[in-house]
Length: 464
Ligand code: 4AD
Ligand code: MG
Image 1 (cartoon, helix red, strand yellow):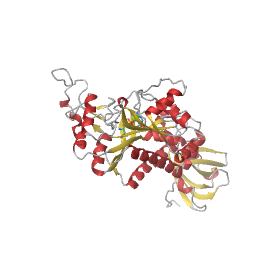
Image 2 (cartoon, rainbow, N blue to C red):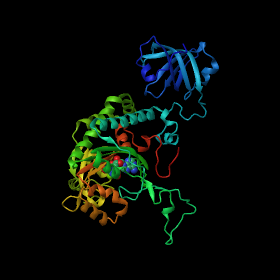
Image 3 (cartoon, rainbow, N blue to C red):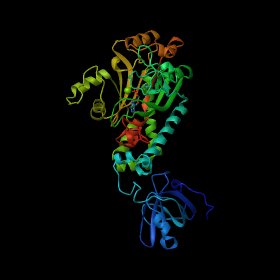
Image 4 (cartoon, protein in one colour):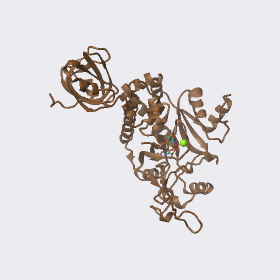
């Protein structure tokens, strides 16, 4: 009997009764009476548990006592049709092996429901809860679906650097990377820091975006995408901001802003569709536990056409709404998530792609419109989330790009390599960035971005 190999719970639940099986996993609950024990075992392969039925008389008392919530065990036995409700099959145990105990007095994940705040404080154990198991499986499925989507379309996955000397978004939100001795920083005559003595011989940081290097890839390979961690030292303590988040950034030669919008809409819809087709068990659990409209919302996004709206029209709608916003609106202001959500949730009741923003609230690389005031940027705005995608058509004219860099007082010298794309064989091109965790907020219905990434990094928080 011991020669049986382990079957994952997900597969056990689809196996014909009558088979000799071996399950391994962590005990979720144990209940029963002095004659029979029922162990609910989970191994992370599915939200569902396999029930193990133990005839108490045939097992060592001491062993059974140690099989408590959180303990890790192996269960050998026969898969039988379940007599109880709630599961089709269960294991009639013949032998149990205890791998690791979990002392009931100290193991923090006992049966009762825990607050999300408490679970964040034990992020090293929270994957063992139903909620985080579901979220992390969906996170995996979405990552896979992203690679599949672009691979099917012939995009090349380009690995852009995480350490960089340029600030793509120009927002000054970069984490510095240095090996200088902070207690004895070398200085130049004028008192400024002497970065020539630093590891890279100059000031370096963690990237806020792979876009600039992505553009170089697009101008050679045609269509590329990046998918990796990005870092922002913005002091935003909100349910939608992380200091370390993952971003997907496609960049395409010969795409104008309209092509960019079509791709963004199709991309998001196809990811949501993938979740509906492949993650239903987990979605149902999250729908029942947290957000009764989750599945309905996902199904509706797949079906509805996104609204196309210019920033100027959007501002007019907001001004005429009669709504009291915390941040007042007028042409030129950067939209807050309350404004974005008003347009999406109240006014249009569907996702919005907003375009043609004032140049002063957008990055230097965006294509300048003829009006001299706006640029060809586009943000995709989503219910519950606000901005989920930010992108643009890129300025392809060397002259205009250099003029904008001057206007903003940025340094040319750190961007010469980037400007070469416009010097040599420049082409119209576009791209966008999808915040992976913002996508996951939408797909899982979780309300805090700290709960869709295994180990969140936020201001004053770098545990684990
Ligand atoms: O709008 P952003 O800043 O755009 C860029 O970085 C461009 N370089 C992208 C491109 O065109 N290739 O960021 C893109 C997306 C946002 O729409 C949002 O979803 C997400 O990244 N994002 C964040 N997600 C979590 N925490 C943060 N602090 C985020 N900042 C941006
Ligand atoms: Mg943005």
